[in-house]
Length: 124
Image 1 (cartoon, rainbow, N blue to C red):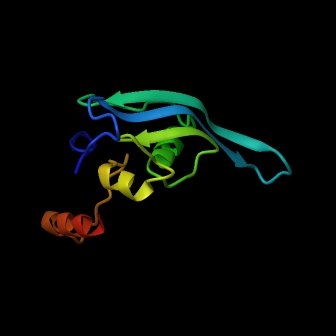
Image 2 (cartoon, one colour; image 1 turned 45 degrees about the vertical axis):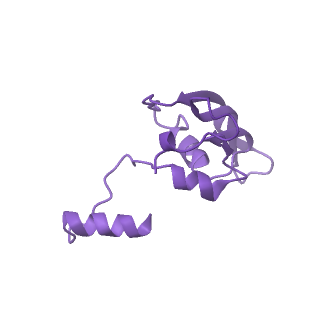
Image 3 (tube, rainbow, N blue to C red; image 1 turned 90 degrees about the horizontal axis):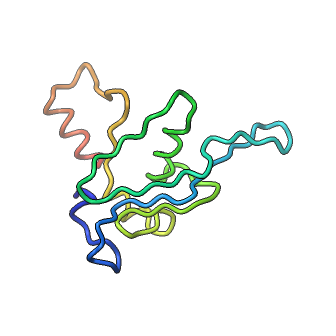
């Protein structure tokens, strides 16, 4: 199921599918109280029917942002919602609505195309 085919929380008339507000992530550097800022105050909306790309130079926080959106990493601050559901409070439901295409192909040389489809379908 993709995010455009789900009910959007309480507001059925809304076309807002993804909402990110003041998102941020800091990591401890291991040197006392020093912190490394990976993402700082990122906000954006994705509406039904839009195509969204996240671009930036190496180290800009693109992967960290996607990891927070998919629940792989907890944000240090900010709010994330998909389909009107909080990522933090409804992670299982949100993951059922999302698909992520990684930057690099994850293919195994020993598997056929059909075997790849079956493998990834079973994982999903």
